[in-house]
Length: 241
Image (cartoon, rainbow, N blue to C red; front, side):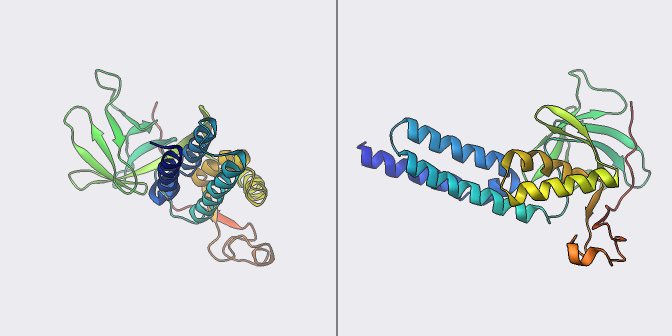
């Protein structure tokens, strides 16, 4: 393969990675990292120069910020770094928990220390049990058993950089997080927003649907009493030891 052919092939590969909207919307930080690793490798191999790498990374960053702005108003969904209690909707009984995509039964773990795994990717997420290979579908934060019974995934924590953070339940803390995240978004501060985004998504609050947390509208908003956000629907999780 000639140098020209190598560059054309590598650029086509990178473009395909950049245009993978399913991966970008499902895992925006990972999508950004993988595209930037590719341009780094291309530069080290002498396929592109510094200016080309800069321009390509600019495209990657623009794709990231576009994705997270869309996701900021998206419906709640399963987060791969989340910790969840699995609560039977009809009885409010917690039957187990999910940590790092691994399911542990409340009645005691199986022989290998766990009872199931969350596999797949949105919108085809599912929990597969170890003992009988039974599969339960995950849609948003709703888990549907093969029997038809419904279970809510009640998030209790979020892992960021290997550390578990509890779900934000305090209104003042949430307000401070929203404000700092907005500054990071406006300044395109990737590290700041990367850490704030999962905390915002997993918090017990959501942006007010009436005033949209708009500074000029929220003061007189009856829906949120001027806070700019409202509690999410649903009750607090029932944890087990």
